[in-house]
Length: 210
Figure 1 (cartoon, rainbow, N blue to C red):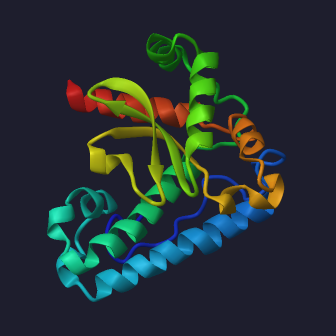
Figure 2: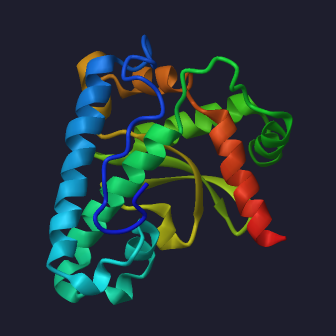
């Protein structure tokens, strides 16, 4: 995987049809091959004209805003955020029925949200609360699990939060199958969440703290 310029569109970690019937194959093709590719192409074009940023990772481009020229603050943020958010979203899903939530992650969720059903309900309400386009996230904020939202292609990294899971609620993520019924899309998405990946991300954070 290219960690800096030029960025490439890495393959999905599963076949395009793998998330059926919850997320349809055509949406996955368009979402990954068209929408994400456009963000990658735009980001590479911007970096081609700005060699001083070419050695930056996506995270560095997003966090180190002060290193971006004023004229590129919005365009770099939008496109680097688009690449980061989409990759994070695609990696957070799976077609493996055996990837159920493990005991440690469930314990942490129960600690911060009372129980798993409460967590799901709060996450769904956050996803529905996004006006227009954006994402719902499960993040670590000062070591505590928290549900938050971002607009457009903003990321929790800019708030110094550590992301564990995200849900893309831009209409292109669900409109072909779910039309304008975002709630049904959220319900279906919960069937394909890669809880193992969430656990790995949590373990990675814990390893940084020890």
